[in-house]
Image (cartoon, rainbow, N blue to C red; front, side, top):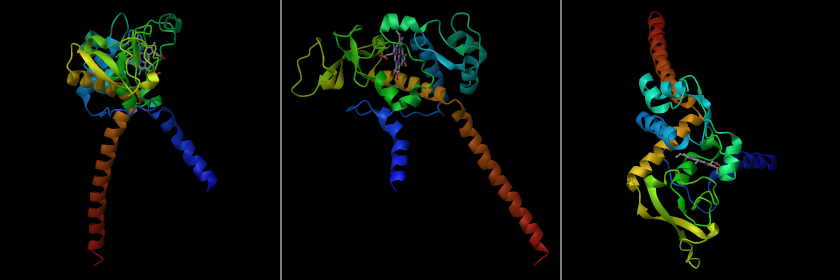
Length: 249
Ligand code: HEC
């Protein structure tokens, strides 16, 4: 019995270790891998806004294009910058030590980020930046306190300020103790409305979820074919059974 409990705890532990950012509850990204246009938009946003820093070193451009139904000319025009070829891995020209120099930390490859965090975490993270002048880039993050990444989407989202736990207000623009931040509030809208920004961040999260397990897309459609095949097999078997038993009765 004790072994069973230990095993169960071990099974669940990865979920709890990375599940949420402490006291913050995560928002639902409503990931939908069947939503091809969301995945296509997500791929374009990723290349435009994230790939300057982050690579996706386990996927190739043409695999993504094939899976998401992006035609070759669009792939070359919208997704590939510089002299990369469709068969190349989605890497960038940064070296690990560049990240150390500029951000004080390595820039993680994001191919598997939705698996070591979760889609909901990534979604909430991209919505949870707030102004904190004590940080090198003037921002902090509700689910990733003392984050090294600047707010790459700030011009689109606008400026958010921290909402402090009662009794801890008064950090106006100055040093903020992340332990007492309980929420964020939009004070200066960016180029997108809140709804548009949510959709954009959801598209990026959707795309990163696909990238974390590209074969899931295929598995889902394969599953349908297997079911159809089984259905057909059942009909044939049933017809044969009727045929064989006809003479017996
Ligand atoms: C200017 C460079 C830069 C850009 C642009 C950038 N990031 Fe980052 N990102 C970083 C750095 C540096 C870190 C590491 C932060 C740390 O560990 O403190 C990071 C961390 C992350 C993490 C957390 C990974 C983890 O689990 O530790 C996620 C998720 C992420 N970035 C997503 C994105 C997305 C999505 C975009 C595009 C919208 C983006 N980033 C654009 C530099 C960047």
